[in-house]
Length: 136
Image (cartoon, rainbow, N blue to C red):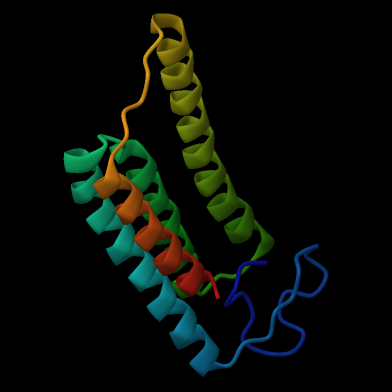
């Protein structure tokens, strides 16, 4: 089950999901972290358009975070709601994988060589620190 999936002992038992018993403080923290992730990934959309034109990745990450946030607020925490949320996130990442395969194949076919970007390297370093901090 997703983080924030249970509100009390025994919630969701017998549905085949992993049971997590979170307090309302844990749920608030989870929502704050999801909102921070959405804000950061939304900023990435603007920055990556300007910097490396890799918008689709950030948009899909924002979409996945919105689905998780929706799921955390959803009162009907049944196995069906879990499966629906997982399918939405899975579909988004499957679309991203397809897009990356097409882009990589095209780049290999035409012999495209990436250029070096000190600003891009600095940006990715900051992104890694932010995302690992949010994950922690």
